[in-house]
Length: 101
Image (cartoon, rainbow, N blue to C red; front, top):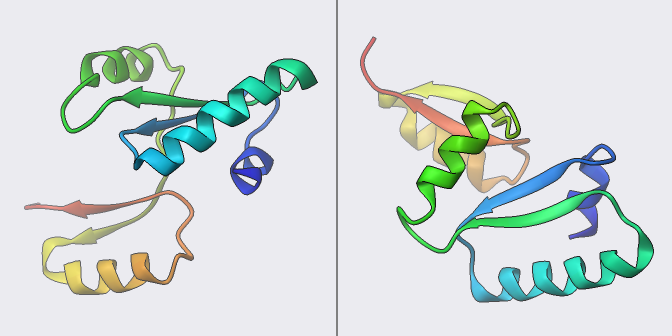
């Protein structure tokens, strides 16, 4: 969690769409702790699981309050390379796969 917070600017928000329970508990604990420290960078769980909360996510995107970070875009035929890169944990954002032209 600390590395995520360091990556955010003051007032920034890290939004997660679904998460493992361990991560949810970490985020809850961190948020409670932040209230006492005056921390302005926030960790938020946007959706509870697959396809839940997507309307809320769309609202944040449309309002410009959430900006997705795309590390790299790969054509469909390079998915094995994309997955290999993702597996190195060197990516700084999401990996996108382009389908078609």
